[in-house]
Amino acid sequence: MTLLRLLPIFLVIAYGLLMWRFSIWRTNKMLAENSTPLTDPSILRLTDRFAKVLELDRIDVFVYEIDVVNGLALQDGKIYLTRGFLNGKARGAYSAEELASVVAHELGHLAHDHHRRRMIDFTGQNAVFVVLSALLNRFLPFIGIWIARLISVALMARLSRTAEFEADAYAAALLIKSGIGVGPMKTMFSKLETLRKAGQDQPPAWLIGHPQPLERIAALEKLEQKWAQD
Image (cartoon, rainbow, N blue to C red; front, side, top):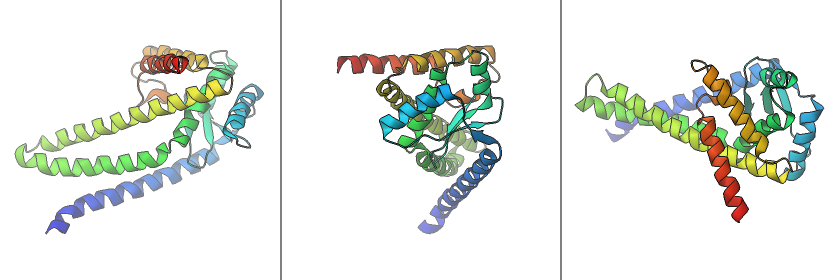
């Protein structure tokens, strides 16, 4: 009887793993078909500094040919900046150092193995939803599932926020060790905050599901104060 009760949870976890693998495959295919190696020398000079600090031969950075402003990293170590970011640099909206800070942030996700943690978080969120919905529906028919969904989504959001702050801290340390400093990262967040305010209904893709830019600037300034005292 106990195993039968646990069966829905096992099925949800298996489904979550399957969907995650499919999502990775689809993302890899999409990026391979629509990306080219980054050739901007001003950014590559800075990522070469990252590689030297990290004792790597190089850091593979690609341009994903979409117009939105975003950055991402894959488990194979490849970093992607969107054409939207590069077009912004060409217009003078972003500097090479600011885009390098995006690369450093994505390296932070790789260093902390956030891709694996996101898979665990995703399956965990679904398992929490199944358990809570079954429990709450006994006492709160009809609205129990809705409450369970809110709780599981809130849990996932909290875990996502933690991952973003961890990646920011890693990026800040890498930028300092590379002789670039945290300044460009803070100005990038300031510019993204301006974009966020200008498009409340459709914020920049790099901000979706992330902490607000001003929160991230405040966290960076706390880190700078702490490191100055050490």
